[in-house]
Image 1 (cartoon, rainbow, N blue to C red):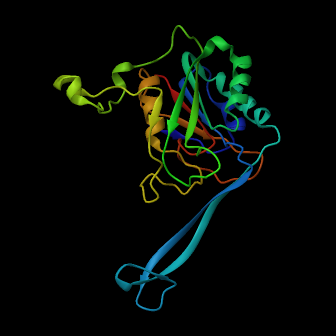
Image 2 (cartoon, one colour; image 1 turned 60 degrees about the vertical axis):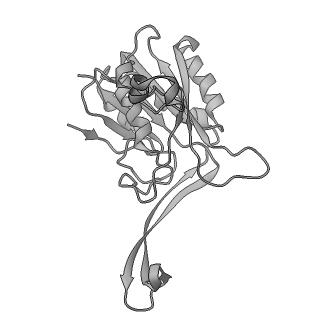
Image 3 (cartoon, rainbow, N blue to C red; image 1 turned 180 degrees about the vertical axis):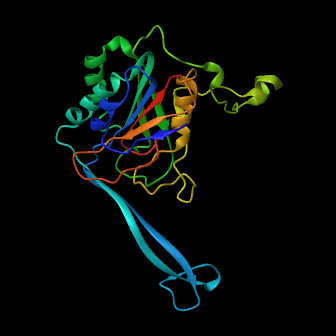
Length: 259
């Protein structure tokens, strides 16, 4: 059974049970200073003079449908984020892990704030999600990665199911033997993963949606002894923004219940 809760996680998290989640994943806005928007259209073939040309000379009528937008601009970003993470801590089991998904703009400040909140000894690792899409500026190295900060409430006792890790191909399979080559190797803390395709079935239209593959890997490995369900409470910024139904969408706080 799945339960999806849509709303401001600052309001939703205090209503959830205590000590039920082995995994909390937080994917807030990145404080880009911009209005994040994704325009959506509906295209239909027409026999007349449509507004858009297509393959083999066909014409199409284009209809604009509702767009998803939110203002990604915070004067006090840490002040916005930390109370929401604190509200999630009461939901976590003693062997739970916390992942906070950020980019280069705020990750350093949030890392220091989380060290103070949880203790530096609770920090386990950082995961780099690298991708290869979008423009490439000529004045600096292109920013093509996000960072997931990983904290364990108990660094000596947390869920990490090594057997559940998905395998990737060896770059030189002939050097490791047939058995290892067939099994593949486990990923490192740098994950190469594409974006959500524009025509993908998981695409919701939300501006900064993340691919489900990133979150699915975390769920498989870090909630191995948990029931196969999740509770998602997308966080809302102080400005109005539309709700989303996907746990991997931007600014969501996802908790995976234990049995």
